[in-house]
Image (cartoon, rainbow, N blue to C red; front, side):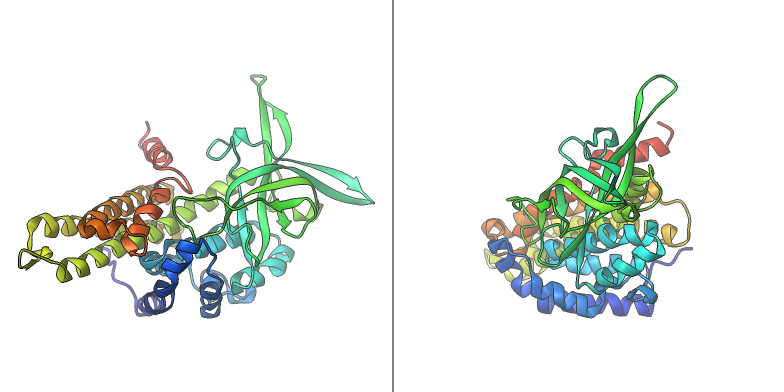
Length: 391
């Protein structure tokens, strides 16, 4: 029978990050949320802890851990502050991981030590106004030309909803672009989509004004504009024409990470509701004595348990080298819904206080909706699951 208990090493990591989340992250979460300010001081301490390097080999400045270690850290951070958690998730699984998975040795040596140390952040430039799940909608282009005797990619286009793309420590954005076309047998035109590394100090690259979001207010998210951006031919990441396929594999892994974050958010709602139900009294009793409240919290815990097992299972298959696409989709679907449902129920438990932004459950209520949208909507996850069933 499978054993889902954590090894001593994993448990120590989880406990360490939990203590950090409670003692360092939580006390400043409401402030950064209210101010829509990026928590540089928290990110710096996360960098010192080695969290940005968890799944990378020591030769590139990493901690020599694995993806499950990252997921455990995200779960603990997600309990108290989803903005901080998504900063780590996007910085590692979306920012640095494409370089590690598909980069040349020279690209890895140039970028991974910076990114694994947490001294620099990278963004994942896939989504556009008319493209995300639909690769055919990609309009950003990159053409290879000889400029001053050097083969150079010239990039033009826009990107939307790009996390970690405009901070003071953002150094790189990985961008998908149409680098050519081909004609299919039926006469239709197929876009060749490739991936390019774009340093953020490249002329023509601009992070536009940050979004005014419903939630994740302390997370950095911008639209991007690329106007005649020149990067060397050697900035091609992976094989030409495989950019979208490579990004899809990155998203499969990322769904495990997002599921872990969502489990943390769902658990945070349970923890806060349990404390409140034991402290708040009405009609001479603590409200946790009433079945309307106790059953609600019990159902919340059941969602957490189910979602946690789902992402543990997906991570185990991934680390074992087995197919995990469907399991990752299930974990993302179940955990995202658990976070949203628990946030709604926790807000109800708190009553009027649940509508006050300084309370964690109120922030989870605003933050959790994006967990059913970002890195593949719930509908996309259902499509992947149905496809695996042969439908």
